[in-house]
Length: 234
Image 1 (cartoon, helix red, strand yellow):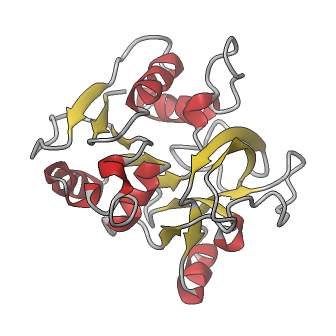
Image 2: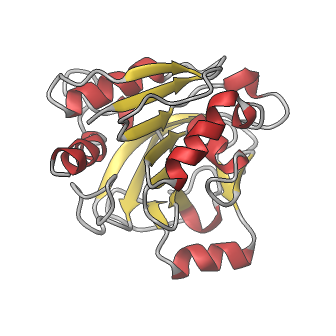
């Protein structure tokens, strides 16, 4: 898999993401690091990742300034041609601000920054990002955000549900989508959203935190193995 991780000013999870992708590929295939000021993507990429952090210090709205970085025009074109894009935390916010995914990420319902583990239930296991899971599987990941409350109007939410574009939902470890499990207050407990073609995924929690058994377990590793497996068999 040939992957690239985009680095914006204030992003701080690019190395964690690169390590997760490398671990999922057996230690090979080190991702490229691309500065946001680049106007074009290298040829032959399989995946572009927008990692977490605080691009531009979260001024205006989280991700709003990064969405207008020069490289985002190339990322949009890449996605329009059927390329795969993953946005995690601030990356999800950037995807929404850039119009590549619907909805917006608002302040957490508690109005507090959340730094804690959560659980997500896999709603779709037939995507390039989730094919190492089974429908209904749950896995643990880390929340680290102040603006992770997914919002969209009711018509958009109905469309996402009707078109099966909700990839992940906050849940208990047993898979129950309860109010208590939805710590940031996201509409309908939505934790991850897909594009209509299933090739762009945005999610708020950090699966890259859980890829090493020596650090915090490997709950998130199947997400990255799904991607490496998809492109290994392509």
